[in-house]
Length: 406
Image (cartoon, one colour):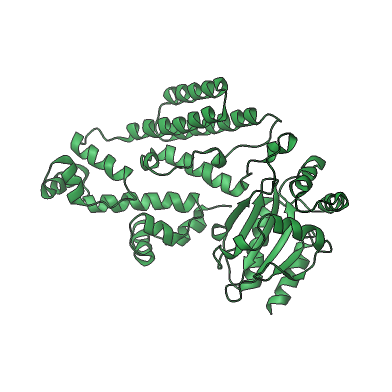
Protein backbone atom coordinates (compact mmCIF):
# COMPACT_ATOMS: atom_id res chain seq x y z
CA UNK A 1 0.00 0.00 0.00
CA UNK A 2 1.39 3.41 -0.96
CA UNK A 3 1.86 6.30 1.43
CA UNK A 4 -1.12 8.27 0.12
CA UNK A 5 -3.41 5.26 0.49
CA UNK A 6 -2.18 4.61 4.04
CA UNK A 7 -2.85 8.23 4.98
CA UNK A 8 -6.36 8.14 3.51
CA UNK A 9 -7.14 4.91 5.35
CA UNK A 10 -5.83 6.41 8.58
CA UNK A 11 -8.02 9.51 8.14
CA UNK A 12 -11.07 7.32 7.55
CA UNK A 13 -10.30 5.37 10.73
CA UNK A 14 -9.76 8.53 12.80
CA UNK A 15 -13.00 9.99 11.43
CA UNK A 16 -14.84 7.20 13.24
CA UNK A 17 -13.98 9.12 16.44
CA UNK A 18 -13.11 12.66 15.37
CA UNK A 19 -13.01 14.65 12.14
CA UNK A 20 -9.37 15.81 12.21
CA UNK A 21 -7.86 17.76 9.31
CA UNK A 22 -4.80 16.59 7.39
CA UNK A 23 -2.11 19.00 6.14
CA UNK A 24 0.98 18.56 3.96
CA UNK A 25 3.51 21.43 3.98
CA UNK A 26 6.69 22.01 1.98
CA UNK A 27 9.92 23.42 3.43
CA UNK A 28 8.76 26.97 2.75
CA UNK A 29 5.60 26.50 4.79
CA UNK A 30 3.32 26.35 1.75
CA UNK A 31 0.36 23.98 1.75
CA UNK A 32 0.80 21.10 -0.71
CA UNK A 33 -2.35 19.26 0.30
CA UNK A 34 -5.07 19.66 2.90
CA UNK A 35 -8.46 18.25 3.87
CA UNK A 36 -9.32 21.37 5.85
CA UNK A 37 -12.13 23.47 4.33
CA UNK A 38 -11.02 26.41 6.48
CA UNK A 39 -7.39 26.68 5.35
CA UNK A 40 -7.55 30.48 5.32
CA UNK A 41 -8.44 30.43 9.02
CA UNK A 42 -6.25 27.73 10.55
CA UNK A 43 -3.12 28.12 8.42
CA UNK A 44 -2.55 31.66 9.80
CA UNK A 45 -2.90 30.27 13.32
CA UNK A 46 -0.21 27.69 12.54
CA UNK A 47 2.02 30.30 10.87
CA UNK A 48 1.54 32.68 13.81
CA UNK A 49 3.25 30.25 16.21
CA UNK A 50 6.30 29.82 13.96
CA UNK A 51 5.00 27.68 11.13
CA UNK A 52 7.17 25.01 9.64
CA UNK A 53 10.56 26.20 10.95
CA UNK A 54 10.53 24.54 14.42
CA UNK A 55 9.49 21.24 12.81
CA UNK A 56 12.41 21.26 10.40
CA UNK A 57 14.80 21.64 13.33
CA UNK A 58 13.41 18.59 15.14
CA UNK A 59 14.58 15.00 14.61
CA UNK A 60 13.28 13.75 11.28
CA UNK A 61 12.79 10.16 12.39
CA UNK A 62 10.57 10.90 15.39
CA UNK A 63 6.90 11.96 15.51
CA UNK A 64 5.99 15.35 16.98
CA UNK A 65 3.27 16.75 19.22
CA UNK A 66 2.84 20.53 19.13
CA UNK A 67 0.89 22.32 21.85
CA UNK A 68 0.38 25.91 22.90
CA UNK A 69 -0.56 27.54 26.17
CA UNK A 70 -4.23 27.44 25.21
CA UNK A 71 -4.39 23.67 24.73
CA UNK A 72 -4.58 23.75 20.92
CA UNK A 73 -2.70 20.76 19.50
CA UNK A 74 -1.13 19.62 16.23
CA UNK A 75 0.52 16.30 15.34
CA UNK A 76 3.37 16.16 12.82
CA UNK A 77 5.74 13.81 11.03
CA UNK A 78 8.60 15.02 8.86
CA UNK A 79 9.94 13.18 5.82
CA UNK A 80 13.71 12.91 6.11
CA UNK A 81 14.36 12.82 2.37
CA UNK A 82 12.47 15.84 1.05
CA UNK A 83 11.81 17.51 4.41
CA UNK A 84 8.08 17.98 3.79
CA UNK A 85 5.85 17.79 6.85
CA UNK A 86 2.59 15.89 7.30
CA UNK A 87 0.27 17.14 10.03
CA UNK A 88 -3.03 16.43 11.76
CA UNK A 89 -4.95 19.17 13.53
CA UNK A 90 -5.73 21.45 15.03
CA UNK A 91 -7.73 20.04 17.93
CA UNK A 92 -8.05 20.75 21.64
CA UNK A 93 -6.91 18.67 24.61
CA UNK A 94 -9.55 20.30 26.83
CA UNK A 95 -13.08 21.52 26.26
CA UNK A 96 -12.93 24.72 24.22
CA UNK A 97 -14.94 27.27 26.16
CA UNK A 98 -16.06 30.58 24.57
CA UNK A 99 -13.56 32.38 26.81
CA UNK A 100 -10.71 30.22 25.56
CA UNK A 101 -11.71 30.77 21.91
CA UNK A 102 -11.83 34.51 22.50
CA UNK A 103 -8.29 34.42 23.93
CA UNK A 104 -6.99 32.59 20.85
CA UNK A 105 -8.65 35.08 18.50
CA UNK A 106 -7.20 37.96 20.51
CA UNK A 107 -3.73 36.40 20.50
CA UNK A 108 -3.44 36.58 16.71
CA UNK A 109 -5.30 39.84 16.27
CA UNK A 110 -2.06 41.67 15.47
CA UNK A 111 -1.49 39.63 12.31
CA UNK A 112 -5.12 39.27 11.25
CA UNK A 113 -6.87 42.44 12.23
CA UNK A 114 -10.23 41.91 10.58
CA UNK A 115 -13.03 41.59 13.12
CA UNK A 116 -14.97 39.50 10.60
CA UNK A 117 -11.98 37.17 10.18
CA UNK A 118 -11.71 36.68 13.95
CA UNK A 119 -15.41 35.96 14.18
CA UNK A 120 -15.13 33.31 11.46
CA UNK A 121 -12.11 31.79 13.24
CA UNK A 122 -14.03 31.55 16.51
CA UNK A 123 -16.91 29.82 14.75
CA UNK A 124 -14.53 27.37 13.05
CA UNK A 125 -12.74 26.60 16.30
CA UNK A 126 -16.05 25.68 17.90
CA UNK A 127 -16.19 22.75 15.46
CA UNK A 128 -12.77 21.40 16.44
CA UNK A 129 -12.83 18.17 18.45
CA UNK A 130 -11.43 17.57 21.93
CA UNK A 131 -9.00 14.60 21.80
CA UNK A 132 -7.62 12.86 24.88
CA UNK A 133 -3.87 12.34 25.30
CA UNK A 134 -4.32 8.57 24.91
CA UNK A 135 -5.98 9.00 21.51
CA UNK A 136 -3.76 11.70 20.06
CA UNK A 137 -0.71 9.67 21.07
CA UNK A 138 -2.13 6.79 19.02
CA UNK A 139 -2.90 9.13 16.13
CA UNK A 140 0.64 10.55 15.90
CA UNK A 141 2.13 7.03 15.95
CA UNK A 142 -0.31 6.02 13.18
CA UNK A 143 0.69 9.10 11.15
CA UNK A 144 4.36 8.22 11.64
CA UNK A 145 3.78 4.72 10.26
CA UNK A 146 1.67 5.95 7.33
CA UNK A 147 4.26 8.52 6.25
CA UNK A 148 7.55 6.73 7.00
CA UNK A 149 6.44 3.10 7.00
CA UNK A 150 8.15 2.59 10.36
CA UNK A 151 6.79 1.66 13.75
CA UNK A 152 7.37 4.05 16.66
CA UNK A 153 6.49 3.94 20.34
CA UNK A 154 5.27 6.65 22.68
CA UNK A 155 8.75 7.21 24.09
CA UNK A 156 9.92 8.26 20.61
CA UNK A 157 7.52 11.20 20.47
CA UNK A 158 8.99 14.72 20.57
CA UNK A 159 7.15 17.67 22.09
CA UNK A 160 7.23 21.30 21.00
CA UNK A 161 5.52 23.91 23.17
CA UNK A 162 4.94 27.36 21.74
CA UNK A 163 3.39 30.58 22.95
CA UNK A 164 0.49 31.73 20.82
CA UNK A 165 0.08 35.02 22.68
CA UNK A 166 1.34 37.96 20.68
CA UNK A 167 1.08 40.70 23.26
CA UNK A 168 1.87 41.38 26.88
CA UNK A 169 -1.53 42.74 27.74
CA UNK A 170 -2.86 42.43 31.23
CA UNK A 171 -6.36 41.30 32.02
CA UNK A 172 -8.20 38.03 31.49
CA UNK A 173 -5.89 36.72 28.77
CA UNK A 174 -2.85 36.92 31.00
CA UNK A 175 -3.88 33.88 32.98
CA UNK A 176 -3.15 31.78 29.89
CA UNK A 177 0.32 33.24 29.32
CA UNK A 178 2.15 30.40 31.12
CA UNK A 179 2.76 27.39 28.90
CA UNK A 180 0.52 24.43 29.67
CA UNK A 181 2.63 21.31 29.60
CA UNK A 182 1.34 18.21 27.91
CA UNK A 183 -0.11 15.82 30.47
CA UNK A 184 2.14 13.00 29.28
CA UNK A 185 5.23 15.12 29.93
CA UNK A 186 3.83 16.20 33.31
CA UNK A 187 3.31 12.58 34.27
CA UNK A 188 6.91 11.71 33.42
CA UNK A 189 8.30 14.66 35.39
CA UNK A 190 6.20 13.75 38.41
CA UNK A 191 7.24 10.09 38.25
CA UNK A 192 10.91 11.08 37.98
CA UNK A 193 10.64 13.22 41.12
CA UNK A 194 8.92 10.45 43.09
CA UNK A 195 11.47 7.85 41.96
CA UNK A 196 14.39 10.06 43.01
CA UNK A 197 12.83 10.50 46.46
CA UNK A 198 11.92 6.81 46.80
CA UNK A 199 15.52 5.85 45.98
CA UNK A 200 17.16 8.63 48.01
CA UNK A 201 18.97 9.57 44.81
CA UNK A 202 21.64 12.09 45.83
CA UNK A 203 22.65 12.59 42.20
CA UNK A 204 19.44 14.60 41.78
CA UNK A 205 20.88 17.26 44.09
CA UNK A 206 23.82 17.90 41.72
CA UNK A 207 21.94 17.59 38.46
CA UNK A 208 20.23 20.43 36.67
CA UNK A 209 16.87 19.48 38.12
CA UNK A 210 14.07 21.51 36.59
CA UNK A 211 12.50 23.14 39.63
CA UNK A 212 11.32 26.23 37.75
CA UNK A 213 7.63 27.02 37.53
CA UNK A 214 7.30 25.85 33.92
CA UNK A 215 8.19 22.30 34.97
CA UNK A 216 5.72 22.16 37.84
CA UNK A 217 3.82 18.98 37.24
CA UNK A 218 0.44 19.79 38.72
CA UNK A 219 -0.42 23.38 37.78
CA UNK A 220 -3.96 23.39 36.47
CA UNK A 221 -6.62 26.07 36.35
CA UNK A 222 -8.66 25.01 39.36
CA UNK A 223 -9.61 28.63 40.05
CA UNK A 224 -9.16 32.09 38.55
CA UNK A 225 -6.37 32.78 41.07
CA UNK A 226 -2.96 31.75 39.69
CA UNK A 227 -1.28 31.75 43.12
CA UNK A 228 -4.01 29.56 44.58
CA UNK A 229 -3.65 27.15 41.65
CA UNK A 230 0.06 26.93 42.43
CA UNK A 231 -0.63 26.25 46.11
CA UNK A 232 -3.04 23.45 45.23
CA UNK A 233 -0.61 21.87 42.75
CA UNK A 234 2.39 21.95 45.08
CA UNK A 235 0.36 20.68 48.03
CA UNK A 236 -0.77 17.69 45.96
CA UNK A 237 2.83 16.99 44.97
CA UNK A 238 4.03 17.20 48.58
CA UNK A 239 1.43 14.60 49.57
CA UNK A 240 2.74 12.24 46.86
CA UNK A 241 6.35 12.87 47.87
CA UNK A 242 5.53 12.14 51.52
CA UNK A 243 4.28 8.69 50.56
CA UNK A 244 7.30 8.13 48.30
CA UNK A 245 9.61 8.93 51.23
CA UNK A 246 7.78 6.40 53.42
CA UNK A 247 8.16 3.79 50.68
CA UNK A 248 11.87 4.66 50.63
CA UNK A 249 12.26 3.82 54.31
CA UNK A 250 11.55 7.08 56.18
CA UNK A 251 9.31 6.56 59.19
CA UNK A 252 5.70 7.71 58.64
CA UNK A 253 6.00 10.10 61.58
CA UNK A 254 9.12 11.81 60.20
CA UNK A 255 7.74 11.89 56.64
CA UNK A 256 4.42 13.42 57.64
CA UNK A 257 6.08 16.00 59.87
CA UNK A 258 8.32 17.03 56.95
CA UNK A 259 5.40 17.09 54.50
CA UNK A 260 3.11 19.04 56.85
CA UNK A 261 5.86 21.57 57.53
CA UNK A 262 6.26 22.28 53.82
CA UNK A 263 2.50 22.38 53.20
CA UNK A 264 2.12 24.96 55.98
CA UNK A 265 4.92 27.00 54.41
CA UNK A 266 3.17 26.87 51.02
CA UNK A 267 0.00 28.41 52.46
CA UNK A 268 1.99 31.08 54.27
CA UNK A 269 3.91 32.07 51.13
CA UNK A 270 2.95 35.28 49.35
CA UNK A 271 4.56 34.81 45.94
CA UNK A 272 5.18 32.27 43.19
CA UNK A 273 8.94 32.30 43.76
CA UNK A 274 8.48 31.48 47.46
CA UNK A 275 6.31 28.45 46.64
CA UNK A 276 8.72 27.21 43.96
CA UNK A 277 11.62 27.45 46.44
CA UNK A 278 9.57 25.54 49.04
CA UNK A 279 8.91 22.83 46.49
CA UNK A 280 12.61 22.58 45.68
CA UNK A 281 13.60 22.36 49.35
CA UNK A 282 10.90 19.75 49.97
CA UNK A 283 12.38 17.47 47.30
CA UNK A 284 15.89 17.95 48.72
CA UNK A 285 14.75 17.21 52.30
CA UNK A 286 12.96 14.00 51.35
CA UNK A 287 15.84 12.75 49.18
CA UNK A 288 18.33 13.33 51.99
CA UNK A 289 16.09 11.64 54.56
CA UNK A 290 15.66 8.53 52.42
CA UNK A 291 19.38 8.40 51.65
CA UNK A 292 20.19 8.62 55.35
CA UNK A 293 17.85 5.69 56.03
CA UNK A 294 19.62 3.67 53.38
CA UNK A 295 23.12 4.45 54.55
CA UNK A 296 24.84 1.25 55.66
CA UNK A 297 26.20 1.87 59.14
CA UNK A 298 28.66 -1.00 58.72
CA UNK A 299 30.67 1.09 56.26
CA UNK A 300 33.52 3.18 57.55
CA UNK A 301 33.28 6.94 57.20
CA UNK A 302 35.83 6.92 54.36
CA UNK A 303 33.99 4.27 52.31
CA UNK A 304 30.61 5.94 52.90
CA UNK A 305 32.14 9.22 51.73
CA UNK A 306 33.43 7.45 48.63
CA UNK A 307 29.98 5.97 47.93
CA UNK A 308 28.27 9.34 48.39
CA UNK A 309 30.70 11.01 46.00
CA UNK A 310 30.10 8.34 43.35
CA UNK A 311 26.32 8.64 43.66
CA UNK A 312 26.37 12.43 43.34
CA UNK A 313 28.80 12.59 40.40
CA UNK A 314 27.57 9.83 38.09
CA UNK A 315 27.59 12.14 35.05
CA UNK A 316 31.21 13.11 35.59
CA UNK A 317 34.41 11.12 34.94
CA UNK A 318 34.98 8.76 37.89
CA UNK A 319 38.26 6.92 38.44
CA UNK A 320 39.84 5.06 41.34
CA UNK A 321 42.70 7.59 41.24
CA UNK A 322 40.25 10.49 41.65
CA UNK A 323 38.43 8.85 44.55
CA UNK A 324 41.64 7.82 46.29
CA UNK A 325 43.05 11.32 45.93
CA UNK A 326 39.99 12.83 47.62
CA UNK A 327 40.47 10.54 50.64
CA UNK A 328 44.24 10.74 50.74
CA UNK A 329 44.65 7.00 50.08
CA UNK A 330 46.58 5.12 47.46
CA UNK A 331 44.40 3.60 44.78
CA UNK A 332 45.44 0.10 45.81
CA UNK A 333 44.52 0.65 49.45
CA UNK A 334 41.14 2.19 48.55
CA UNK A 335 40.35 -0.60 46.08
CA UNK A 336 41.08 -3.30 48.64
CA UNK A 337 39.23 -1.55 51.46
CA UNK A 338 36.18 -0.78 49.29
CA UNK A 339 35.97 -4.41 48.15
CA UNK A 340 36.39 -5.68 51.72
CA UNK A 341 33.55 -3.51 53.09
CA UNK A 342 31.07 -3.63 50.20
CA UNK A 343 31.95 -6.96 48.60
CA UNK A 344 32.04 -5.09 45.28
CA UNK A 345 34.83 -3.46 43.28
CA UNK A 346 34.76 0.31 42.79
CA UNK A 347 34.42 0.01 39.01
CA UNK A 348 31.52 -2.41 39.31
CA UNK A 349 29.82 -0.15 41.85
CA UNK A 350 30.16 2.84 39.52
CA UNK A 351 28.71 0.78 36.68
CA UNK A 352 25.87 -0.45 38.89
CA UNK A 353 24.96 3.10 39.97
CA UNK A 354 25.03 4.37 36.39
CA UNK A 355 22.80 1.51 35.24
CA UNK A 356 20.35 2.31 38.04
CA UNK A 357 20.41 5.96 36.99
CA UNK A 358 19.81 4.94 33.37
CA UNK A 359 16.80 2.85 34.44
CA UNK A 360 15.24 5.92 36.06
CA UNK A 361 15.86 8.11 33.03
CA UNK A 362 14.51 5.49 30.62
CA UNK A 363 11.33 5.03 32.65
CA UNK A 364 10.72 8.71 33.41
CA UNK A 365 11.76 10.64 30.32
CA UNK A 366 11.70 10.63 26.54
CA UNK A 367 15.42 11.31 26.19
CA UNK A 368 17.14 9.45 23.36
CA UNK A 369 19.02 6.32 24.44
CA UNK A 370 22.27 7.41 22.83
CA UNK A 371 22.07 10.68 24.81
CA UNK A 372 21.58 8.75 28.05
CA UNK A 373 24.60 6.58 27.24
CA UNK A 374 26.75 9.64 26.58
CA UNK A 375 25.61 11.52 29.70
CA UNK A 376 26.39 8.56 31.95
CA UNK A 377 29.84 7.99 30.48
CA UNK A 378 29.27 4.76 28.56
CA UNK A 379 31.13 6.02 25.50
CA UNK A 380 28.86 4.53 22.86
CA UNK A 381 25.31 3.29 22.44
CA UNK A 382 26.56 -0.22 21.65
CA UNK A 383 28.64 -0.43 24.85
CA UNK A 384 25.72 0.92 26.88
CA UNK A 385 23.36 -1.65 25.36
CA UNK A 386 25.73 -4.50 26.25
CA UNK A 387 26.35 -3.27 29.81
CA UNK A 388 22.66 -2.62 30.41
CA UNK A 389 21.54 -6.01 29.10
CA UNK A 390 24.25 -7.79 31.09
CA UNK A 391 23.01 -6.14 34.29
CA UNK A 392 19.24 -5.91 33.74
CA UNK A 393 18.61 -8.80 31.38
CA UNK A 394 17.08 -6.69 28.61
CA UNK A 395 18.14 -3.88 26.30
CA UNK A 396 17.50 -0.24 27.23
CA UNK A 397 14.85 -0.02 24.49
CA UNK A 398 13.04 -3.10 25.82
CA UNK A 399 13.24 -1.76 29.36
CA UNK A 400 11.70 1.55 28.29
CA UNK A 401 8.85 -0.16 26.43
CA UNK A 402 8.05 -2.28 29.49
CA UNK A 403 8.16 0.56 32.01
CA UNK A 404 6.90 3.59 30.09
CA UNK A 405 3.26 2.67 30.35
CA UNK A 406 1.54 5.57 28.59
